[in-house]
Length: 332
Image (cartoon, rainbow, N blue to C red; front, top):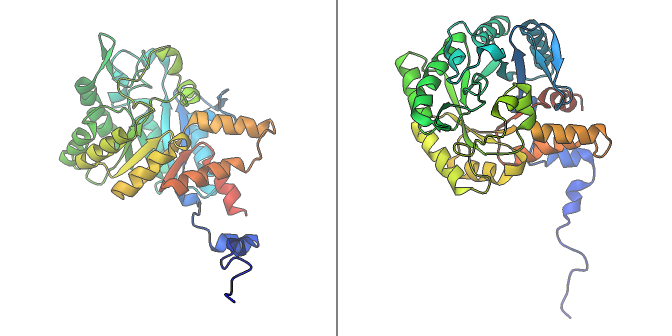
């Protein structure tokens, strides 16, 4: 009589018997070193100011920003991304304040690096915080002018590098800007500045709270960024964008948003094997945070969302929850 197994030869539940075994064989681990905390620094302001659409996130005056960075470091995080909240009176159609040598964000970066020289500081390269129309570039006949915008981004990049930024992150999605910025940094002896390209930045509706945070939403109004940010239905185009940015000198590429675009993160990481970051954007953060506060979701859902982004292939994640999640995973 032929023998047969009454029970399965492989029981995958053996590896799920308790938390220690689960941790032992875990394929994806999230640590503080994987997390980057965005921070909003407001010009001509003291203290901290709530952002209504982003629970527990604030705009900081520079002195309070320094205190906040100290708590971020204490939580185990060593990377921040700094975003300016510019005085409305200083905004114009060309984003001229972005290349003012004594502008607010340059002064803020210098102070941060003086106080915390070891922190990795990422500076955003884009014009939307500085334009009175809220677009990431210079408008001509209601169209964002690609090449004219790049000329300004080049100068803005030099200014931020000179201020002490470790990583420049062009988030504007202009064609060819990575190559121009890289060549300029090389020529001006900023050879060690890292370029983190927002290579696959989608024209997403998840950005709303961020635009409120930097006060660009009222300027943008009902205008669309669809002529330069990517169509939400495209994957091959994202791979094309990444390939171009790598060829132009990008050191790291970014996918934004993160959780709705896990397939994009995975495809990019598998195809290019380049450091790949993801941005859990304001809308992702706020919807989860509000659901947690209302008791609709367990508070561990934020950690779960970040682990999923890491599992998809992200080497590091920008998240407004970074500080809190870092405390959580370090206290477990």
